[in-house]
Amino acid sequence: MGPLISATDLHRSLGAVKVFDLRWALMEPNHGQGAYLAGHIPGAVFVDLDIDLCSPRGAGRHPLPGLADFSATLGRLGLAPGDPVVVYDDAAGAVAARMWWMLISIGHSDVAVLDGGYQTWVVSELPVETDAQVPIPARYKPARAEFQGVVDHLGLAGREIVDVREASRYAGEYEPIDPKAGHIPGAVNIPLRLSLDHTGLLREPARLASLFEKVGDHPVISCGSGVNACHTALAMTVAGRALPDIYIGSFSDWSSRDLPIHTGQRP
Image 1 (spheres, helix red, strand yellow):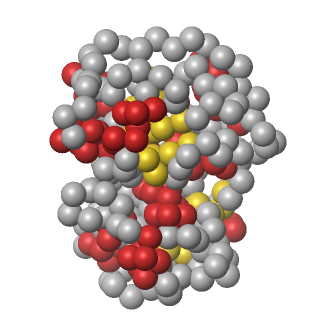
Image 2 (cartoon, helix red, strand yellow; image 1 turned 135 degrees about the horizontal axis):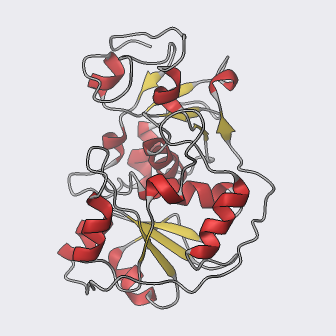
């Protein structure tokens, strides 16, 4: 399974896969829990991005948790090694891909993102439920000793950087949350939205391959805080590319330091 699954295929697989709801919104801290309780895919367990997939301390807004803490979280969520997993959100996978990438990074390979997210499920007139799921705790022992493919600000020197934020944030014309506006010097801009069609589905592999054709073999993907970058990693995987590295701190980390920043549309 993976890296993508359609709504109809997920519907056929309910009961045989662990499903996690990762709805979240940057400016609405309670959005995800409220949306989940209003209706979710049957059997889905809610995952809080800020609590379950991040550490309260570290570089940037959404630092990775320690592997021991993440493993304990996965066990609390009812996940065991080898369980097939599907993750979804209401942002075309831009948030859910963070958990997809974290699982892939620690060696949990049987994981997919719901293509098109919860909206596609609803549009397909598939069943929903409102009762909160209480998972049966499990024991999760990761296959790897640490997260793989993680880059910090010190590891960016000489690397090809792809910034997936919207062009206006990349250019420094608009910055809603980070302390400075602009981009990391040398980073090229390939906005996340370019990997999606007008319905919120990922574009077909050939279109995605064309989108990334000028990107080298070993890029580092950056965004605002290491969440949306994981979606571009997903898109590159669907395009047949190797899983790229992620700058988890991303611009929220870079802009908080005494480091140079460029503005405008050029790298």
